[in-house]
Length: 462
Picture 1 (cartoon, rainbow, N blue to C red):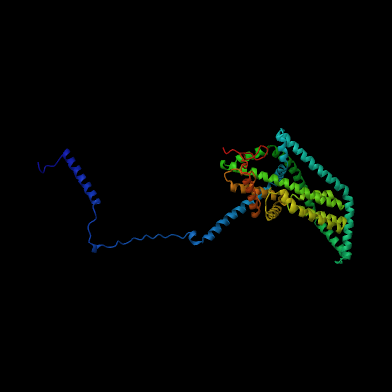
Picture 2 (picture 1 turned 180 degrees about the vertical axis):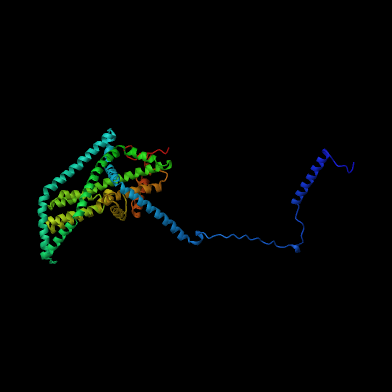
């Protein structure tokens, strides 16, 4: 049997055993310990170094301060570009935007009256229409009285202006300047020649004035319609705008708008009261001194006072010039004293007392805002610069301190805190003292974004 090749089932079994032995041997060789090597024969393995050539990055070349400055510069350039594009769009749509802004300021002035009528059971449409008609009667009645006074006194004013010009000429010829009549005639001829040469420019200016008059008429009717719907549906409009935002931003934005609206209402009411006091004070002085056009000049002071710090001063200068030309230098000096006294009363008594904590802005911020507004949008820009700054101040302060949209504890707009740190700390200590004296009465909790009569209603986050 030995030497006979296996066939069939025996050959298959032998092949299987040979494969198993080979696999066992391979596994044993893998798990076998390393061979023993004497200590003298050990050698340190040669390290293998892998060198990769890398190009230096910007972080390695530029200092960190330069990288930070570059990042800020890029963001500043993008911000300036966005602001420029925004102003261009506003300039293109100024015929629509300016009436809407004016209607918003008027709504802040008249909305409490419409809300009071609504609380007494009157329908919102009827209340808004009644307030709008009353405002139109007040405005047109005042304008009619001013125009009538101007027309009735224009003849006497022309005569007084002519006499005043003759007095100025006599003073120039006999005074310290010693201007001769021939020199005065030369100056008059130059003025006439300049008018003749610029006749084309004057004609184009008249055409542009006609275009501006058309825009004013269009803007007037747009203000009326916008003001009516602001008074009637201001809350629903604001709620609709807030629902266009992402869900997480709806409640914070709605509540920030609520506090900003309170700031705007307080600012407009305080400004109207201050302007009225300025107009009455300067108007009484002009009337006592028998300066022509006392009522139109008082109305001009009233309108100019809506531009804080600057407006009443500029219109007061106009009143001084009219007094100088019409009544002489003595009356002009007295009017100057009256204007200065009224300005001091406004700056030191009216502004702190009437404004109070309604709008707490630093005087430098007010001046810069007015200057920027006048440069960007003229008189309208100067008119809306300060209320816009006050609204942004309130909204930003609230969102910084209450990013999730929770109400303030005292229901007061956070942007009305004093700009002076010492004054703000003193007011906070006074409020804390009052709360400690009567701890049983907690501050009212604001459970809604706005009351029913305010155009900043609560916006649900769902």
